[in-house]
Image (cartoon, rainbow, N blue to C red):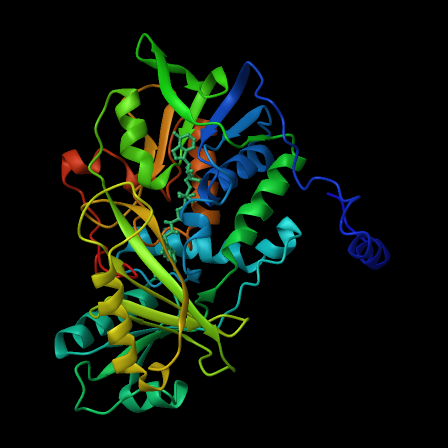
Length: 416
Ligand code: FAD
Ligand code: PYC
């Protein structure tokens, strides 16, 4: 991978970057690949990277209908943590959290992973029972997790309102110190550049419009850039998963909902931990630029429009102001929405499908960003070996038939 000297950075800065190489190539699709990944978000790109790196499969194309990272990967609020309740989910997210530790250096791309800690607030006795159950379960799985009192929350976040006379009194919280944030567009660019260096073709502006099959096997995809033959196909299209499953002739237990977030004007550093409130459906952190980065729960309606309704934003913003009265005069400068793929148990689907040679990675709902490296790693393993890894075996599509669900609604960042 190419590294730039300080001298070359200064020279390129002065001449307006005119001599910079492309960070990844811009190839035309070849007629045939060993693996085609549909979806150039973090999960699709990470899958291509690990297929090349770990399994030595390099005749791969990632097909992206827009630009890479333009879906939920570039629209999320960057929260990374692993404090899930059930063993299966805790192990998958913890595996991913461990991959984050060394990812900037592995990809030679500064992902700005900051272990600022993640707080989950409790506002009722039932919240606190759920939180302490999860803290105990985390510890049994070797995951760092602490139970904090109201005073300890105030000590960590002096600007938070801990008065008992509020709409959302703070009775305590859980804290995962290794949790935090990482730069989301960097994840798409870092994985994209590293996959490209292995020879992976990243083809942007290439929408898959059909999946061809012969004798019960997937054999290729029709795209806006023509037909592409493939020995294996991996689908990682998040909110569009039901659309792709429809092309392949089966249905998924997935609903796609809008999920919104926003940033404010930058201010001096006042908040150095991520604060989430699952029962209030709102959360906030402060970026390195000083903006407050905040988000809401899902909009209740289903749809593929990447925008949400004002009432949801208003509810979340007013809750945040109740928790942080000091934020009441700050201006929101930008708001956006993504479309998240929710399953009945708030857990992903990573594995085989009814169509031979077609593999599926979806259902991450409001919380798949943190899982990006782990998800790519296990999905690559599954595609390369035609069988799931132990870590993703419980997350099969069949669990919705057998009933072996893994209910992570309590640990989902925001309700869905
Ligand atoms: P995406 O990044 O959405 O990539 C899928 C890609 O597939 C898209 O680029 C799309 O254009 C492409 N595609 C779709 N159809 C086709 C087609 N037919 N042909 C070709 N390409 C196609 N998770 C966390 O862990 N922490 C958070 O703090 C967090 N905050 C969030 C906040 C918001 C507002 C949102 C919307 C999501 C948040 N999430 C968070 C969830 C997280 O962003 C997603 O789970 C994760 O990014 C999904 O990654 P992905 O690669 O699967 O999907
Ligand atoms: O999964 O931690 C999370 C999350 C926070 C905001 C949206 N998702």
